[in-house]
Length: 350
Image 1 (cartoon, rainbow, N blue to C red):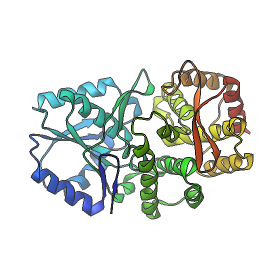
Image 2: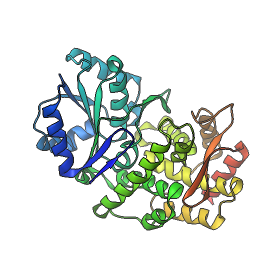
Image 3: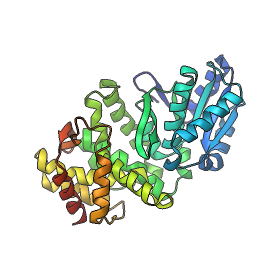
Image 4: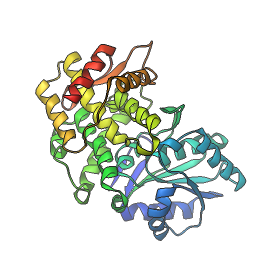
């Protein structure tokens, strides 16, 4: 089975590795580069090597969101330059969202763009970054401020890599799967609202990919409809950034922050979109069963609100949100007041 995205294809398991090897054999790439971070270098690269029959140059970067920045880009570009990369070179990004984000971005601008292939190794990356062609880096610790839309040549998904994740990382990816149901398909949300263990999740990964692919096909460059994928992300990204600034060594994972964002924005949906309050409580309970509660004081909430004001989705100094009208249906560009945002934190804390 494979899934056709807008201009690319996702291949699964053995079919994917076979297609990769045949593609490299038939290609005229002058140089092959594989990008990993320190984690995937240790835990995922050996399995990658066991499945490929070609040589490559290895680029290793530091792991973590705190390193998804221009300094790491410079390291990658220097390595490419020093090792003879040209416009006919290929980059294979083997890793989670940080690796595929920064790998896709650096490849897309190096010599005005070289081909890249993504091999996601985290659940978050499999269900989120593997579709849609978003690449990018953080700037001044604001999430994804610099980037381009560029799809990989193709993507390979292999459930083997889920074995390399700790439970916290697995749950982080699961948060995005729940989001897909909340914004676009009620039945899917209820099907996975009771937490599914990784050994049974493969079928649901494919469903999430199908949902996201349908959304992206309607609006690749996020002028309108694609914005619904940002549900939970306006506040979630700000929360993620706040904790990254506060204590980089103990920062929240992306899905952990987004889960809080979805609870907060479900509350806002009840105030602005007539969203059912009982469903908002159900969403709150669903996430509280998976993620531990985080404490926010008045100072931290105000700092998070200041970060929200820098969100790239805002226009004319308005706070723009994706909100729910019901489970499985969402709308975008809803202007929300700062007072309402503060109230949403009270709701989360209650």
